[in-house]
Structure formats: structure tokens, C-alpha cells
Image 1: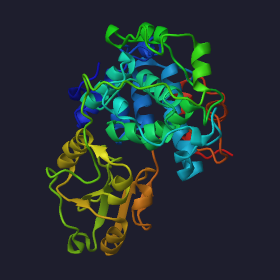
Image 2 (image 1 turned 90 degrees about the vertical axis):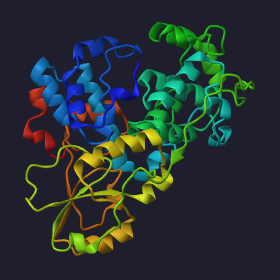
Image 3 (image 1 turned 45 degrees about the vertical axis):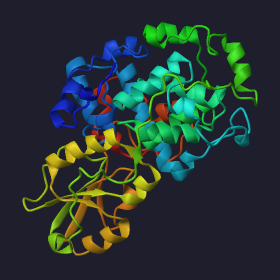
Amino acid sequence: MATTSDFPATLPAAEAAVMAVCPDGYAMSRNFLDGAVTRLSPYLTHGFLSTSGVLRKVDARHSLAAQHKFVFELGWREYYRHVWSHRGPEIFQSLQPGILPEDAYAKDLPADIREARTGIPAIDETVRTLYATGYIHNHARMWLASYVVHLRKIHWRQGADWLYGHLLDGDLASNHLSWQWVASTSSKKPYLFNAENVARYAPPSYHSPGSIIDTTYEHLDALARRLTPAPGLSSRSFSTAEPALMSEPPPSFILSPPDQALVRDRFVWVIHPWALGALPDDLPADALILAVLPPELFAIWPWSGRRWAFLQQRLSAITPHQWYADTNTLTSILSVAREVHAQADPHSDAFLPTFTKLRPPDLIFPLVDARCDSFSRWWNKVNRSAKTVADLLKPPAQLSLL
């Protein structure tokens, strides 16, 4: 299982994680909580690594086919960004009707779920691991989402917002669209799981015999389609305190006041929380490296202290110039810079001044102009006739497809 020390916010740690990837082991055991998963996601989300860069390095050591499961899973990350680019804020609303009306789902996440005291080991162990490490296995995320939505009748958006705040790898597109997939508001049917599935893929501490999930899939499907929620555990025994989510940097951050004199007539490279990788090689020698934390975003999407600490560790190694400043302030102050450049990312693009010159992301697959509402349709467009990773990564892969 992951621990905090698995995710040092350093470039060597990110590179070591790439070098440790065993794609065939991943393909065979990725569904097991102790399987050969990559744990690259915090580094991908925060821009230490790009999907294309990861694939190039892994393929150099393992010569992957274009249809390898590892390539497929990197594709899901890019597909969710594709959906976000076309749907925008719509990804935070149900993309299609689910199995019950919207008003059948509650708008508050109950305390017994937040405090890991539902009495279902698979759920409580998942929540405790989330708080202890900032990371949980994807299979456990699906179990948690399925339980929250289909058994407890909590709206997927409440669960998605809560989980995002505690994850080191919280990506708004991947997280919220994954919850929609489980909830069947972006898929054909609800995702369900039972105690047998947990026993197959998880360690004994997660096993949940005799619980509400210890039943057949037919019965679980019937429960998911009922309006009545399954009861939570009323006892407060063995509760786990939920870490606070913070919309402002903690006091340990050493922030600089925005300073127009500092940026006047200079080339400014803006670092933001989703672009923490190596600085571009072609920056001018006198470039000012400026870190920007957008308060508008954190007001909506607060982070755990663990994630703030992850960000702080990396930023402190990049630049002493760290501003917590809103878009209007940035626009006014940076307007006197010679040029302002940044790495494009949908989390931050809306909060940077409009005159910022954005560098495109380093993607595996071509951009698709036509919106694809299913992964399979998108995959067929972008993968087409590629047989090897080398085919995928040829320069034409960055051209736009209609």
C-alpha cells in the first residue's frame, strides 16, 4: 500500500517512478490493491511528467504495442481532458440522466463515510488510507464511489468534490468524470461491486463478509434502483477524523507580495500547481520564474494540508517568487512584463492573464476537434492503425483530427 514517502515532490522521485514501471506486470495485476500499479498519477497531475514523456521512456525499455493496457490507461487520462476541453463546466453536472432522478440523491456526504465508520471494511479502509496517504488505488476509488452513489444515494458530485480535495493526484477531469462513469451519468450502466470482488482483489483488512455488499450483483442492482438509501452505521466507535481542507496556502508557505517592479520589461515564466516539471531549456537567461497560486480556484476546490505540503516542497526548489494573487491583480501587474509564458493546463488556464502565451501540452494522442462522448469512439479516432508506440508518437500525432 502507498505511504506518504512514496510521493516526494521532486524530479528525481518522479523519474524513479517512471523507471520502476513494469507494463506487463501492470497489465496483469493492476486490479489488485497490491498489484504492479505505477503510482505516477500525482506526478502526471502536477506536471512533473507528461503522458507522452512517460510513454517514450517506458517504451524505450519495454517496446510496447500501441494496444498495450498501459497505453490504454494513459489514453483514459487524455480522453478525460478531451471531454473537459469540449464540455467545459458541464463536466461538473450530470452529462446524462442516471438510473434515478437527480433529486433522489442527497447533497451532503454523511459523517459515517467521512469518518470511516460505515462498518464496511472495504469502505472504511479506503477512507483511512486516503487520509493517511493522499492516495488510493483506482479499484478502491470505484468501490467507494459506487457505495456512496448507489447504496447511500449521495449525489456523485458531493462525493467527487470531497475525494478531489484529499487526493494528491486530484485531477478535476479524471476524478469527476470517473465518478460520473460509476454513477452511470456518463456510461451505459452503473458500476457495482460486491464482497466477493473485494475479497479477490484486496488484502484481508478490506474483506467485508456479512455486510450489505455481501450479496449478488442482481440484488445490488435492485438496491441501486431503489429510492431508499442503505443505512449508515450510527455508532461513533473507531471514527477517523477527516483532515481539514484549506482554500488558502498554510502559514508555512513563504509568499511574496505581487511586485510590478520585479516583472517590468522582463520575460516571465509562470509556474502554477499543474506545471511543476523541469523548466524549459529555451528560457532566456534572464527569465523571471514566478509561481502563481490562484485563489479563485482554491476557493472552489480546497486542498488537504498534505497536498499543500506536496506543492510547497516542489515550489521551494524552483523559485522564491510565489504569489497568491487573483486574476485581476495578475493581469494588472504582469501587463508591464516584456512577455508572459506558461504551460497550458485546463486547471489554471482560466485564471492566467489573457495575454499569457501558453505552451501546448505534451500529449500522446492527436487533438480531436469533434467531441467524442465515449472512450471507444475517441480511441478509434486517435489510435487508428498504429501498431507500435513509435507509430503513436510520430510528429503527425500532434495534428488535429476532424
